[in-house]
Image 1: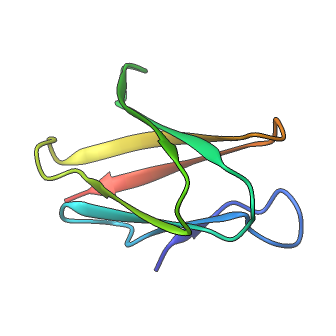
Image 2: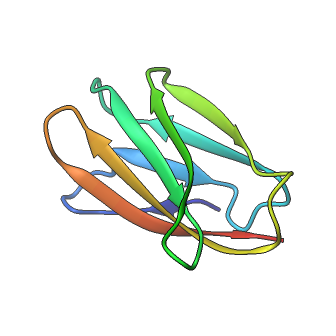
Length: 87
């Protein structure tokens, strides 16, 4: 199951699996490029990447189990936020 942030009727991004044991998939349901940033619970940026593919993979295996927050910024200026649980 993935987290879908619905700022409209259609999710621009699907993040799955959630919870994850190490690999996070990000499916871009739009035609826009975007910047993906992942933060720990202290608000520190731990990953920041420009993603251009329809599906991208982020390796979280080197990070501690817990809750992480993501922010996705599209080239149009729209943003989506969510959380990911790593087990």
